[in-house]
Length: 167
Image (tube, rainbow, N blue to C red; front, side, top):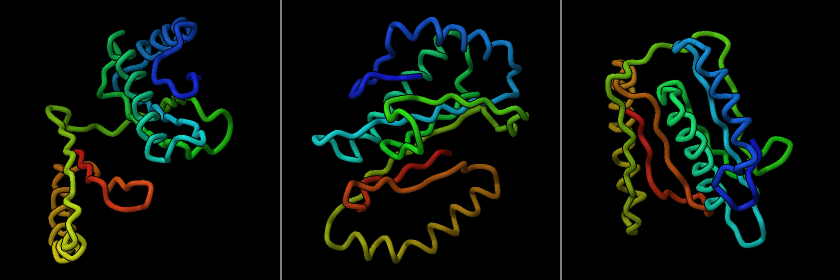
């Protein structure tokens, strides 16, 4: 699905194509999952961080459109890759459906936790001291099925910006 450079809005000319996609998705059983992989091209005035944010906004806009048309959000995974475009137009969202049943998740309740990290001079040492306990606890939560994934978001200088956890 192409997007106008710098925009997160769905082009009105693409709505009929999206509606055809909705019809196809509604014919698939709830056991099938779909991935929206979003990209955003860079220009001289934008940073990789801005491209990631724009690609995320595009993917969420697409997901919101699909869910307002009746597609369950539990079936849609979102990936925002910013300017990391393997080939083709950089301003787009790719839609890929899994042909095999997706693993069942306990969809009773899921949370996305965003934790902003302090940037004081002692922060790197504090993170290093807590790292082993943190990884051990995350491994325990993952093994129990109470943790899906997590990771650090880095700024354009590869420094910690915040941590994201999906539990």
